[in-house]
Each structure stands twice: as C-alpha cells, then as structure tokens.
Amino acid sequence: MFEFKTAIHEIPAQQLYYYYLVLFVLYLFFLRGVKLTTLSLTIMLLFNQGFLLLIDNQGVLIKILFIILAFVLLFRGRFTFVNRKEYRILIFSLLFMIMFFWNYIYSGVSLLWGAYQYYKHFMPIALYFGIKGLKLTMGQMNYYANLIIKLLRFQIVFSIVKLVVIGFRENIVGSAANTGGGIGITMAVCGVIIYWLLKNKEFKGNDWWFVFGLVIIPIVSNKRAIWILYPIILVFLITHFISRKTLRKLSYVVLLLPLILYIGLRLNPSFNPQKKVWGSFDPDYAMDFILSYTGISEEKRESDLAQGRLGTAMAVIPSVASRPFEINNLIGLPKARSGRLSSDSFDMEEYGMVSGTITTGFVLMLLQYGWPATLFLLLVYINMISTIPDKRTRNVLMFFMLWDTFLYTGTVLNTTFHSLLFVLTVAVAQYKSQYVSDGQATANTEQIPEVLFAVRSAN
Image (cartoon, rainbow, N blue to C red):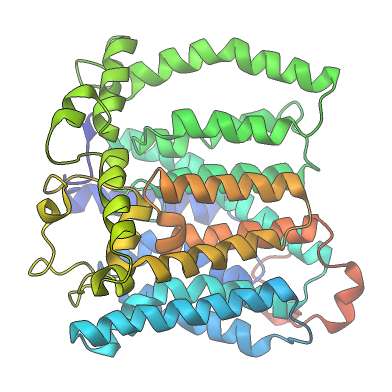
C-alpha cells in the first residue's frame, strides 16, 4: 500500500506543497497557548524549519533567524555566576573553535566560509548559556518543556499525514526537515526523556500512548536504529529503582519484545528479503544485514578495504593513533568551501575504506577536525551533561550522546537540529533536578509582555 523511498529520491514539488498545506491547517486549528518570547520563538523555529525550506532550500534564512534569536537571548541574559563545569564548557568551546578555524586557514579556504560552517557549533553553546542567563523560574521552564512536548505531539500527527500523503520517506520528518530522517531518532529519544521528567520520572496509564507514539516519527522515516535504541532508553528510564511496580513494568516490556521484533523486521524494508514494507519475517536475513551494514560480517572483514560504521572505525582509529602528530590527524583533512572534506585531498581508499561507505560520527570527526578538536567537542558536551545533578538523567543523556557519536552518525554533536534539541533537554533536566530554584524569579529576564501573547496559555 505504502511506497518506500530513501533520501536520494526527490519528493515531487506538488506533493511536498500539499503536505505542508495540510500541516499548516492542522497548526491553524489546533495549536494554542503559545507565548511569543525569544525562547519560544527559538523552539517554534526549530520544529518548523521545513516551512522555510520550501522558499529557501539552502537554509540561509533559517540560519540568520537562529543567529538573531541566539544573540537576543545572550544580550538579555544576566550572567552573575558561571560554575566550574560551565567554565570548562567555555574553555573547551574556545579550544575547539581555534582548531576548527586553523583547518580553514591551513586549507586556504575563506574564514567567512568557515564561520558559515561553524554556525552549527556556535548555536548550541549560545542556546545553553542563553537559557542560563534568562534565570527562568521552575514554572516557566515547565511551560517551555510542555511546549516541546506539544510540538512533538504535532510531529507524531504530521508523521501519520506523511505516511498517507507521501509514504515512507527518509528525507522528510514532520515539519522539521526536508532532508535526512535521523532527526526522528533525536525527537523520539529527547522527547521521551523530557516527558519522563515532566511526569516526575514515572509513566502511568495514558502516558504510554505518547511514549510509544514518539516511535512513529523515526519509523515512518525508515530509521532502523530506533528499534534497538528506544527500548534501551526506556529501560534506563523506568528502572529508576527496583520495586514490585518496576519489575511488573519490565515484565510487560519483556513480553512485548517478541512482538516489537516481529513488527520491526517486517515493517522496515532493510530487514526483510523482499525489501518492502511488511515483507516476510526472517531474523537470519535481518542479522546478516546488520553485520554487513556495520562492516563486521565475515565477508566484509575478509576484504582489504573496510566498510560500514564499525568496520571503518577499526581502520581509521588505529591509523590516527599511530600517527597522532601528522598535520592531517592534528587539524583534520583539508576542507572544501562546503565544509565537507575536499575530494582533491581525501581518498577513502587511502585510509583503507571502500569509497562511499558509511562511517560513525566519531570517525568522520577525526577526519574532518583532527583528534584534538574532536576531543574538545566531546568534552564540551560531557561537561554540559555533567551539570545535571540527577545521576539517572545524566547517565541516560550521556549514553545517548556517546552511542550517537561512536556507533551512529554523530549528529548530536554536529547537526543544528539535533544539538539544539539535545541542549534543550539538558536545560529541562537541570531545572527538574533542582539545578536552579524558584527563588531566581526576581532576576528573571524572560518576562513576557502581555502585548506579545499569541494566545493565553491555560497553564
């Protein structure tokens, strides 16, 4: 019934416009209670970039709007205190920036082009400190967390609309993007963590409809990793403490695992021999695909050139470690104006990889930035996560970030949408862990003028 197409298949313009028209109508009739503040506008823009990409497919307008909002947040902030961990965030960000631009200078590429590419690393740091400077009360942070959840509910509905209007597509996710389906995974993971925090770290009754509804977003975008990652994240969240209630919940999850496996293998075209939605159930075929995809199957390991995420990691990491002070390993390979590796100076086969093969985020970072900048960027996010007082929340976010970096695409650290939503999740976690107190209300800088209320929130 539904056609499956990957990201390389272009969506017909008429179909795309019709899809966004339906989304706009849904917003028009059902979106209520949005207060127009700098932070809410940032969140709204984050989840609705797709509308602007219709008129500017390069995303220049989106970048300009994000930068303006970031500077407004920073200028409105009151930074009376920066703790030791946040001081480290600033230091490691500065060190990363130096290494980042050093590559552009060495490659002979204009620093203006470098600044254009650095935007994706500037925005999450600016948002993190921008939120800190606002000194929000707990009630205000609850409002912004609920706004994110509200927008995620829309993304679930939009994904169903996409399935009906367009079909299974990797290259469009809700109203957030027209390229790449990986956004769906970050939406699901960060969304369930924020929702868990809002529900006082316990899902009850109807809460589970939203928890499992989030999975629709990456599934409709044909992301395979969610079938493995999401159950792990849920186990992290619901095993806050071992009790009869927790064991009962885990037993439900265990009982559902065979059903989840069955549906997952038939629903994803990559996991069945027919390569179609709702193909046959063949676990052996699925396992062979996973081993081949990651590059650790017997056939791939016998090849002289590495393939797949893990295969390329086993080729590149030892190569960098054996020559740590070679210039390309220190500052990364030469860049093109696009910010990507220059095809004139980078040959995958010279690094022991099959041309065009996929890699993990960590491998790509080593090649693009060099190992010092890669280390500094990792330390930025590790220190950011470590500011969360609650150990359970801190561990689950750390796991997600490290999993994405070392085993998946590395988009949490390197793509604007992923990093901004991740930073918003960290900010919510800080507040819900009593990182800041309601006593800061007197210094609040995000007061919302009555004249800017779009609609009075019932909350």
